[in-house]
Each structure stands twice: as structure tokens, then as C-alpha cells.
Amino acid sequence: MTALIAALTALPALSIDMGLPALPDLADAFGAGAGDAQLSIGLFLAGFAAAQLGCGPASDRFGRRPVLLAGLGLFAAAGLGCALAPSLPALFACRTLQGVGACAGTVLARAVIRDLFSGEAAVAKLSQATAIMALGPVLAPAVGAAVLAVFGWRAVFVVLGLGGLALFLAVASGLAETIPAKDRGALDQRALARNAAAFFRNGRALGNALAAAFLFGGMFAYVAASPFALMEALGVGTPGFSGLFALTALGIMAGALAGSRLVRVAGRRRVVLGGLALGATAGAVLFALALAGGPALPAVVALVALYTFARGLVVPVATASAMEPMGHAAGLASGLIGAMQMAGAALAASSVGLFGDPLVGMGATLALSGAAALACGLGCENEAGRYAPSAAAPARGR
Image 1 (cartoon, one colour):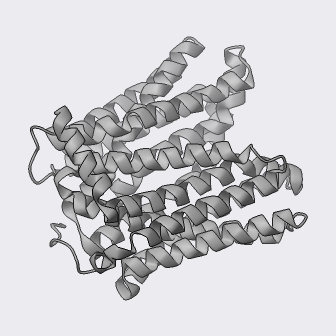
Image 2 (image 1 turned 90 degrees about the vertical axis):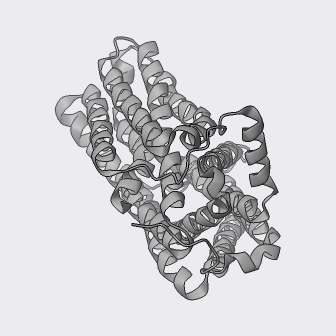
């Protein structure tokens, strides 16, 4: 179960990172510029984002399994469509559909965990899945480069399509329906509005979801700024940049593994607030050093590692806490959480470019994202009693 959830959650990262080495060859094949090739990533994310709010409610109505199988089938078919695309517009269309299919894996992975587990068990599953998922950004570019070197850029999309097919077969043969009861009115506009209002009125759900979204968004600020901050401002070469980029994934992994253990000792509330404080502090120190004339590379690496550790620590725990009150509409809640995280990522990544100095921009955005996340966590302090590890309905884990 944990490995399957991790693989489903990792689909977006694998789909983007495996294709990065192929972008120059893809552009040459169609006689396009670098911007056109990069648009394929933007369209993937657009499809992924647009499907967030529809996928979850559909699974509340029809069940997790059929919607998940439909999404994985679409992902596999779109991957093979990218490999066979005769033109750039055809590739763009297939890449957008691939994003829609990948969304089903990410949204429904959270919903499946909420169906089967609660309390510490849900936190443990999400944290373990996050730790495994963090291997994706480490391994995917190397795998994509190896496939590209031997078979060409189209083979990268063949591999992604076959991966989607393998997940389709794994779900079809190994995952039973997990939803306790299908909500036949889940897609009714009034029911959607009522369930969404319940989510936004619940301080526990909204506070945790916003905290996770802001901290998650800060990571994308680092991703957007790192080529300029590390390679241009600090003079890191391409091999060194790849290694430093991998450290961010290892930081997330370490934080997720630590969170699954700490929550049993300290409780979710303390783990979330401690992680948020760590992330906000790391961002603030990096910003202060950047304003003071530019930090040395070791300081940047250490502070970013602390921020990514905090992201790995907080996001699975906060997500589980945000999902817990929404058992009656877990699919919709998962879609809302995902949409908020995508909005946080877009806001943070766009904000980096507002600063002339890439190090200052990265530090400022990490500091603001961390501070906003901490404020959201503190803002729902009146819900503290319901963060205790034992405060939940009994889990239906298996």
C-alpha cells in the first residue's frame, strides 16, 4: 500500500523531471525554440491543476477505484501519444492530458489514505509515502538522461506511458474500493458548494491546508531560483548543481521519516508547529544573509536543507490533519488541498522574479512563505485539542 501510494503521488514529479533532459532534442525535432519546448511542462501542470477540483468529487460519487483507473489509463495513453506525436501541437495536447491523468494519482492517493486510516496511522502512511516519493526527483533526471542517450527523446515518453500502464495493472489487481459509501449527490452543485463551505469553515482543515500550501510553495521558489542563484550567483557547475538539487529531495525524505516517528512522541500539533518554525527561521536567516551581501555556498546549502527538511516534516502531517475532519467528502478535500498547494507553488515561483538579485529573491520568498505558513499554523491554535494523536475515529487500515 505504501509503495503504491508513493508511486501514485510521484507521478507529476517523475513526468516532469524525466522529461527535462529531453527538452533540447524535442525542440530540435520540431524546429522549435527552447520556450516552446518548456511550454510542454507548463501545459502538463495546467492539466494537472485544472483536474484537481473535478477528480476528487468524482471519486466521492463513483468510487476511488474507477476514477483512479480512468486517470491512470489516460496517463498511460497520453504518454504513448507524446511518443508518437507528429507535431508540436499534438505533443502539447497529449502532455496536457497526461497532466490530467497524473492528477488522479495524486488526489486519490490522499483520499485512499483517508478512507483506510486515521490518526497516527494516516500520518505514518503519508510520511512514508512522501519519503519514498522524494526519490523521484533524485532518480528521474538520471533515468531520463540514460533513456535519451540510448533510445532518443520519444523513448522517454514511452517509459512514462509504460509506467502508467504498470500502475494501472497494480491498481486493477491489488487495490479494492476503499470509499466507505459512495455519495450519489457529490457532483450536485449544491452538494459541492456545501462540502467546500464545510472545508473552509473548519479551522483545523483550512489552517493545516494553508500551512502546507505555503511551505510547499516555498519549495517551488527554490526550484525556480536555484539555477540562477546557485549556478550564476555562486558559480556552481552543472554536476555540482545536480548534486545540490538532489539534496533537497533527501531533505524532504529525512523530514518525512522523522515526522512519522516524532508524531507518536510529541503529537501532531507540536510536530507541525516545530516544523513550521524551523522553515520560517531558515528562510528568514537566508534572506538576512542575502541582504547583507550574499551568503557563502555552504550557508545556502545548509539553510535550504533545513527548509526542505521542514517541508518533509510538516506537509504529510498537516495534510493528514486537514483531511481528517472531511471523511464525508475526502475526495473533494483532497482536491482542494492539492489546488491550494498548486496555487502556493505558482505564487512563490512567480514572486522570485520580482527581485533583481536571485539570492535575495530566493531568500525573501522562502522567508515570506515560511512566515505565512507559521502564521496559518498558529492561527488555528484554538483547535489544539483536536490535534492529539488519539483524537480521531478508529482507523479502518488493513
